[in-house]
Length: 272
Image 1: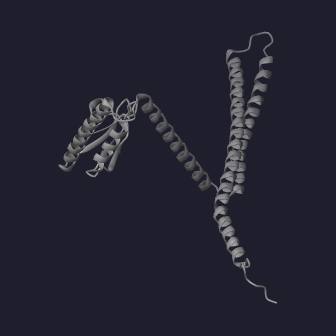
Image 2: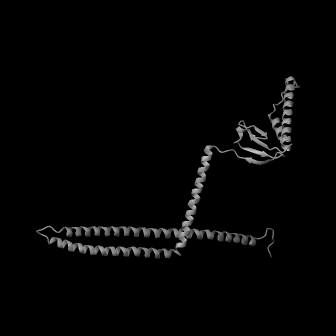
Image 3: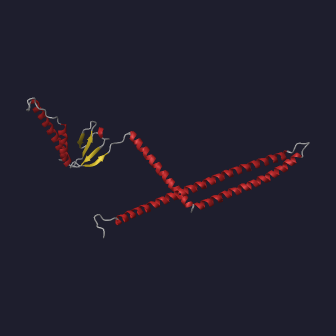
């Protein structure tokens, strides 16, 4: 019956206003308008009665809006409006469920892109948290970072020193070979001697490349530990700030309560 009342009210809003004749009393136009209005009311009441009977028989009732903005009620939604927003009504005409309109292809694309961005952001956050946890578990404090950095640099530096010693030995060997080569004034030096000099020069060049690579490695090690230290201090500062928030809030609340308790009561008389 509540639904019938809604339909009846809608029909009254759609009914045309009743004109008056020029003499101020009802005329033929007025009688036709009254008859038309009565016919409409009868049709609306019959439709509302049929809908109420269908609902009382257990049939579902749907509410939807057409392209012109007119609200419709029925036991099923026409196919052309199946993707529109609609509502399911109870036997008492109360909305029990709302069906959202189907998304357009563009809306679906935008939704999928938004979901993809959310997934990427979640993965990035999880990876960042994993790295922060690993960094905190790798060092006990910032001093340990400096100790490990110095140890790693020392190992590479020792390796460079060993390679430099090998270069020095090779240069001494080369000097002897070159001296031997100068002894051949009237005849060409033996091919074996020339090949050995060339091999020695090649070996010296290779060792120098190793030293250059080791020095680049030292730069990378220093940059890694410096970055770890900076990030370690940032994480520790963030943790300290997060831990200080509850303490500060508790202190503020306690101060407010103390101030309230110590405030004079309005209307209280001062002791003489």
